Image 1 (spheres, rainbow, N blue to C red):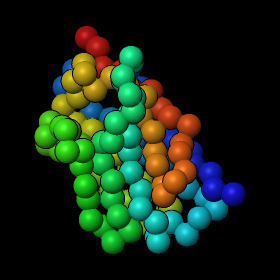
Image 2: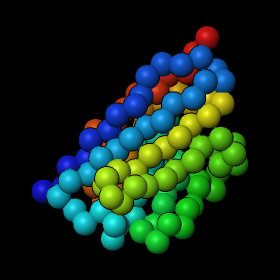
Image 3: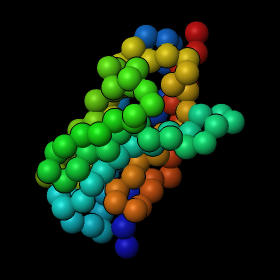
Image 4: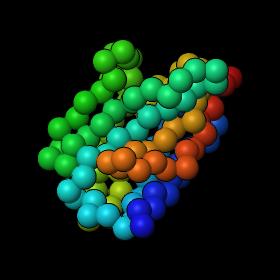
Length: 114
């Protein structure tokens, strides 16, 4: 059974940084694609970024802003994917979800406010 455990969310001021982590178990992590999505209040869930098992990265087509400020990475030795978020903006406030080839994490809240 695949389990994903997210951590790293919290509250920060605009311009701050956070790193989200998602640790997986029950899956051959090195062979799967991983990604992060988010759902802002009152909005649909949207893609942030996906990293393929080979390391290729795809960011949301709808947000050049995230591409400039966010970094997705993975550590296959730790079965973990990360989302480094810099220069956070109020509009980044959302619940962030880890995705590992068809499986979802429980979500972690990120709040950006003065």
